[in-house]
Amino acid sequence: DGTRSAKYIAHPATKAGDVVLFSEGTVHGAMAWQPFNRQRRACLYRFAPATNVYGRSYFGHDGGGGWPKAIYNDLTEAQRAVLEPPYANRLDRPNIEPDGSVIMTTRNERKKQHDREVFGTKYF
Image (cartoon, rainbow, N blue to C red; front, side, top):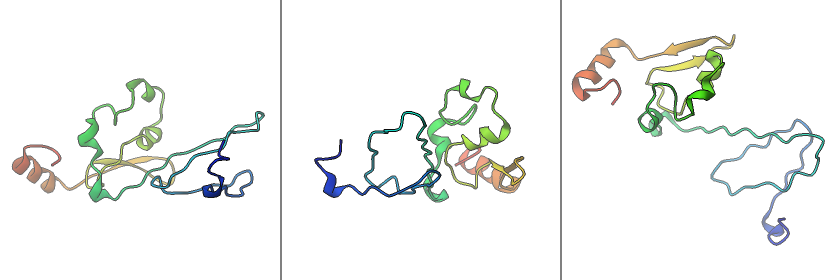
């Protein structure tokens, strides 16, 4: 219930529609949700510099980044792009445009050919 460690807990004063941002490296939690007539929603957004993240090599990319295949049923192209795992932007990656359309950003063919010849793979 948080009473034992109350002196260490910061409870930000928020009102409906407010957003609280913090690093996932911060020890965090939430008190029990009291209002039963409305929802509390949470969104997990992670950011990592492109030089530190290679999600494709962790998940294998054909069909998605580790999500169950059924989760992709009936999703739009933009919704699928949001579910992409984090990985370096030098790799082929769908990007959502302001109008909601999706374009694929990619490296030039010469660089891709270099990776195939030197490393024997599409991505090194």
